[in-house]
Length: 180
Image (cartoon, rainbow, N blue to C red):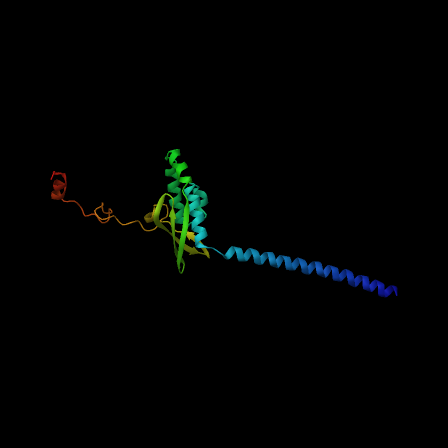
């Protein structure tokens, strides 16, 4: 009978060890799947919100994490200019509220529209590109208004944009200076 008892005890020990090994493997698989599933998701609205919130705080290093290398260069330039701004303007910028409206994805490009308390009622846009499965803000020299895409057209009777203005002739300048 002692042989049966010894064999039964050995079997229980092996069974307990097997449960521990299987539990450990299961936990590793669950953790790996969780990490992989979270790492692959990149929501353009979240990226835009994170970028804009860092930008309004003038935290250019954090904003760079959400941008392309070209965006990083633009942010470096903005950072150097921000050193010249009065503190009152910096404090006012921190109070700006941003609301993301929508994201229009087209392949590996996306335009995120948003509004800010700085310009109530004016919808602005931010261009994003998908690189290695991650959405990144793509700010170019043409977008130097903080990464925003299209600028508003000149109002009727207003001053035309510089690229729309025609070169002034001598007669045009004289007529503008003469009283009517």
